Amino acid sequence: MANNIEHIVNEQGKRIKAIVPLNLMSKVLTGKKSKSKNLSRKKLKKYAGSIKLKKDPLKYQKDIRSEWE
Image (tube, rainbow, N blue to C red; front, side):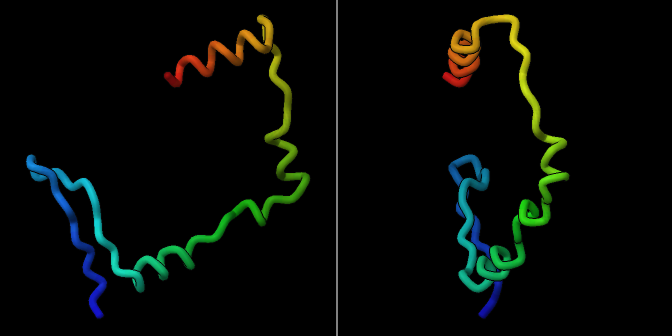
């Protein structure tokens, strides 16, 4: 069985979707493993911290979330 990926294009010829054979997709997915399992407490500590805000935390949260809309 071939590992040919088929592409679906729109009217302008731009690729919008891909059809990937299951055997190829399985190889891709099994080859990817999370690196988070290799993180120790000591390594994770460098990402820990606190944020110092000059405004009310709830107002800050509301302002930040409104950027998504």
